[in-house]
Length: 229
Image (tube, rainbow, N blue to C red; front, side, top):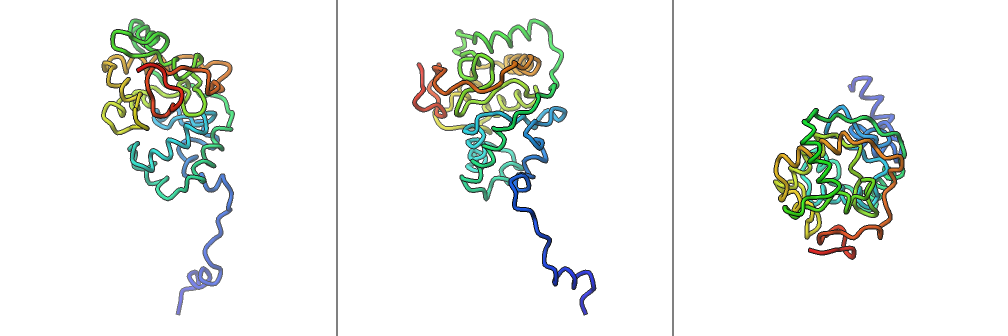
C-alpha cells in the first residue's frame, strides 16, 4: 500500500509551474538580480540591465557554443533555443534600474592614471586603442553588440580580460578583444579594471547608436563597421 503522501502526489500530479518569463529566467535572476542589476558584493556577477540586447543574446550563444567557459552558465543555456535566448536578452536590455556602487581596489594614483590613459587615449606604442573607441564616449556601450563598462566590479573586469588572454573567453573572429588583451601588460589589466570600477557612472547610460563609432581594429562582432587593422 502506498504511503498517504505519495498517493496524494500521484493523484494530484506534480505541482504546476507558472509559465511566465520571470519564472523561466529564475536561473538568471538568482545570480544577476531580478532586474539584472548584478551582485556588486560578489565581484563576479555583472550587471545585465540596459546592455544592448544583441550583446546579451550573443553572450548566451557563446556560452552555448563553448566560446565562453563558466560551467554554471554553460549548463543553464545548454538547451535554450535562439528565440528563447533573444527573449531573455530583450528582457534584461529593457531594464532601467539604478546602478549599485561596486568594489574597487585602493591603488596608487599613478596606476589609476595609467588606467585612465588606456580607457581614454589607449597606448599607441602597444597598439592598444582606447576603450572609448568601441565602448562609447560615456562607456555605456554601442548598439548592437558592444557592452557598457561602467558599474562593473573590478574582479569581473580583470577576470574577463584575463579570460581573453587565456582563451577561456572568445568571440567571433577576428577576436579584437583577444588581440587587445594580449597587448596589455598584467599591470595594465589591473590599472584599467580599477579605473573603470571606480569611475562614476554617467547620467545617461544608454548605448550609443550603431553607426556612431569607427572601430580601430577589425572585429568579428562589428562586421560592416570595421576600421583599420
